[in-house]
Length: 387
Image 1 (spheres, one colour):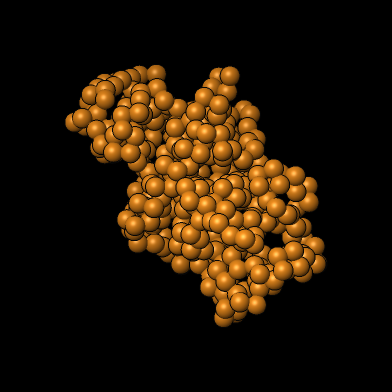
Image 2 (cartoon, one colour):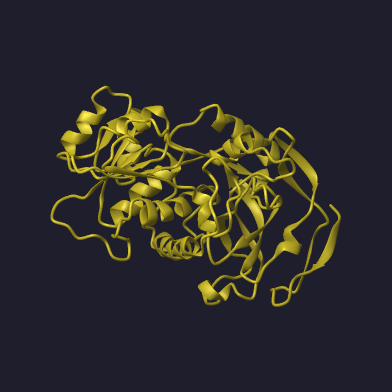
């Protein structure tokens, strides 16, 4: 592969680096379908002082990797949000968060806004990534594998940063857990997802009592990640069972799935006083939960944690919000400490083999077709990286 020497922006370490002239990426065609392109530019020209340049080792597949191109097709936009890889260059302002502790060669995981209609080059399904080191980035301790790093990525933590602070307005944090005589229940609907198991862990560390809905075969999984109780969302008595378990006191619900079934059930689990309902997809204004005057519904778009405009439409659009960005950066620093102390773990990974960019396309198809449960799909860009 032909390489060339690039001069990096002032203050970067190293000041120059040899890289391929072009890179491979997954890019949307006119219909939004992902295609493999080998003629894509490297992100050297887009590096900012707070960035690190990362050589991608593996990626994980998120629902947004097929939903966004499907709902908002943008020809030429690169796909992909979560990644793990190796730091190969560091910007001069990275020390703002890391105090010089992030070094060349460190293993990291993080996220970017893929399928971005106003920034076509932003993506993780590429060989080299310009990543914000002061937000949406974690350094992997030795005990965390590459595949676990890909699963951790950034999507779940960034989304939950907004869910807990803005949507559910929870005051307990891992730094200062809630102290209460009686359990403060929080329901996570769809708890066997990657975002669900991270939510269970962070809620428990913050002093709450998380409870879960999922399929019965995933009950052991959600209990392992901190659920005090698990309920079968398909059971006709599920809502009654949850109300009975919580003594009709439930006031906070995170709905990871947000479909017709989840909105129907969640509308019937709150206590008499209602409460806060956080959803991760556009809610139905005619659903039972939407019609409950005592329940406030908040639709969370996790990409807003980046702090830049989310230029979508139909209710998914969000303005640039630096307060949300600052909160996310703080929460990533907290999760970094928890990760270092082995207090949070990654969701189970399923590695797609063979990997590479064709493996990414296969992973998107599997996820779109509902072919996975209780695990997150991971793809190594090179087969040798797994060993």
